[in-house]
Amino acid sequence: MSEISLTVLIIIEGQAPASVDLKRVDKNLTVSCNCSSEDKVCNHIISTLFGEEAKIVGCDGTLTKTIADMLAGSDVEHAFWKLRDLTMKSAKLKAELAQARTNLGEAIIDFKPW
Ligand SMILES: [Zn+2]
Image (cartoon, rainbow, N blue to C red):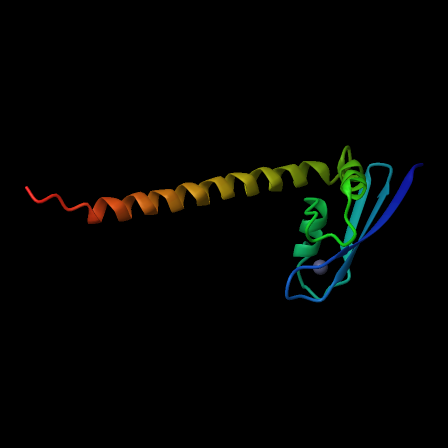
């Protein structure tokens, strides 16, 4: 049986620091946070799993690699990739929406006096 534990300190601007515990036993990955959020998956856990280096205290490449390694092949991996995939699609869609809105803005003021 292989077991790895990791504690990550997360600071999100304007919020108190929170510590996220990751524990991997064989394929089972358990992730918990000590913040007061009622959500099972708070932003600290998301920032940890997504390896958001700007929010992880003392973060270097080693720490994010360890997190990625703990996710890889775990029972959490599939759900994580689904969320990551949708998050990226959502960001792309938001950018397209902003562009479409800009284009509409330009179209409606483009008065041609003929
Ligand atoms: Zn949290």
